Image (tube, rainbow over all chains, first blue to last red; front, side):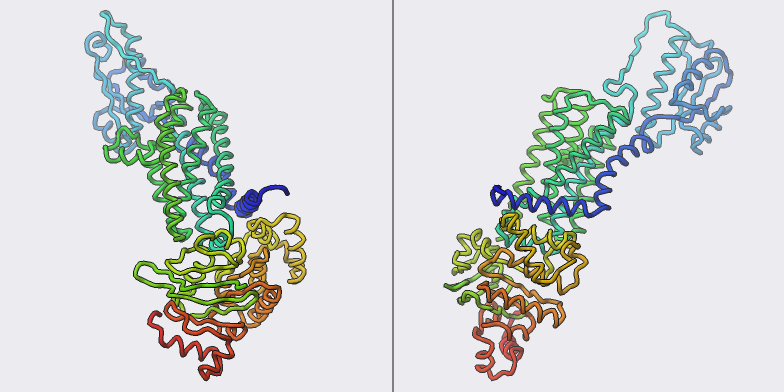
Length: 370
Length: 243
C-alpha cells in the first residue's frame, strides 16, 4: 500500500473497532433494533393521543337537541359512550371509579333554552392534565359546532375557530419522532463511545496504545467512526419508519435535517469522549451516560414535559442539554417545515456545546498524561 | 551506544518525589532487571522512560532520543508489555498482530509474512484464527510479548510481564526474552519474582524512589553475602519508609 503510515494506522484501528462491534452480537442487535422498537412502541402502544375517551352521559330529559349534541360527540373516534347516568351522584362515582373520563351533563329542558343560555356541563377527570386538557378542548369544539347547527344564532356572535397547524390531528407521533431521534442518537453515540473507550482503559490496551506512536487524536477518530456510521444507519431507519409507517412527513428540507442531525451526532460523540476521560470503569461510564445524560434528555428536552411550562431554573438547565436544541430543531425542520434560517439558534447552541466538550476532553486527556 | 541513559532523572507530584535522582545506563542487548517493592517508583520511572510522562528534572535518553523533547520518536523505537493482559480478547490471534503492527506503520505485505513466520515459530498452528479469549494463559503471554517486539524495537519495557503466571510458563517466557536479547533488543523488565531477577544480566533495586543497588545478580549477592537475590532484596527493602 502506498498509504501514509498515519492513514494505515487509522485504518488498522478503525477496522478493529468494527470487529468489536460486530463480534458482539447482542450489542449490535440492540443498536440496530432499538430504534425500530422505540418508534413502534411510541407509535402504536404508548400514546399520549386522545382516543376512546370514556364518556358518561347525564341527560335528565332527552330531546332532539341533546341527542344531536351527544351524537355528534360520540360519532368521533375520540369519544365512546361508556355509561348512561341518571344522577349527579352517579356521575361523581363513575368518575372516581375510572369508569368514565368525561361526563356530559345537560340541564333539564335544554331544548327550550337554546336561544337563551342553554347550559350543559362537562365534568372531567383531570388526573392526567395533558390528556384531559386536550380532549376537553376537542369536546368543546364539537359541542359548539353542533350547537351552532341546531340553533343558528339570530344575532351575529363572535366565534373562535382553532386550527392546529403542522399537526392537524394532534398526533403524538409529531412530537415523539423528534424526541426519539434525539434519544437514540444520544444513547448510541455518547454511551457506546464512552463505554468502548473506558473498556480499553480497564483492560489495559489503552496503555499499549498510548505507548505506541499512534496519535491520541487519530485513535479517537478511529474509535468514533463506527459509531458515526451506525448513527447514520439509525437516523435513516427512524426517518424511514416515521415517514412510511407513522406517516409523519418531512415538511422541511431533508438536507438540512440530515445536516443538523450530523451536528448533533458529533456533539453526542464529543459527550461520549468527555465522559470517557472522567470515568474509570465501564459501569461508571454507563451510569454517567445512562442516568446523568439520559434522564435530563427525557425530562428536560421537551419530549415529555413542555419546556415552556417549566420553572425558570429548569428552563435554564434545559438550555444546557444538547438534545433539547436538537429536538427543537428537528421539530421546526421536519414538522413545521421551517426554512433553515429559523434553526440558527439551535445549530449555534449545538456547535458551541460540541466545541466546549472537545476542548474539555483534550484538556482532561492531556492532564492525565502529564 | 547505550539503549537507555538517565542523568539525575527526577519526577515529583507536588511534594511527593516518586522518582529521585536516577542515574544509570543500560547497554544495547542487555537484560536489565528493574526491581523494587510496590510504591518504590518503578511504574512512574517506566512511564517517564516511555515518553508518557515528562520528567520534573534531569534527563533520560531512550534508543538515542530524549524522552522530554522527542517522546514521539522514543515511542517509535520501544515496545511495551504490561502486567495486565493487553491483547484484544474479541479479536483473533492474527487480527491482534495485524492491529499492533499496523499501529507501528508496518506495510501490510510485511505484516503477513512476518506474522506467518512468528506463528510457525511459536507453534500456534490452529490457534491463529481463533479468538484470543479462548487461548490458554501461557500462550496469551507469549503472544503478548511477541506482539510487543513485532516491530523490532530497540528497547522493550516489560512491566511485571509474568504476574500470576505458573512457573513452567514463566520459564518458557524467559526463553523468548533471551531470544529477543540475542537479536539485539534491549530488555527492561520489572518483576516480583526474585528467581527471575537471577536471569537478568544486571539488576537495579529501587527503594523510596532511589536506586540503592545496581550490579549483576552474582556481584550483588557476593557484596552482601547473600545466597539468593531474594535475600539481597529483603536486606535493601527493609530500609524503605514508603510501603
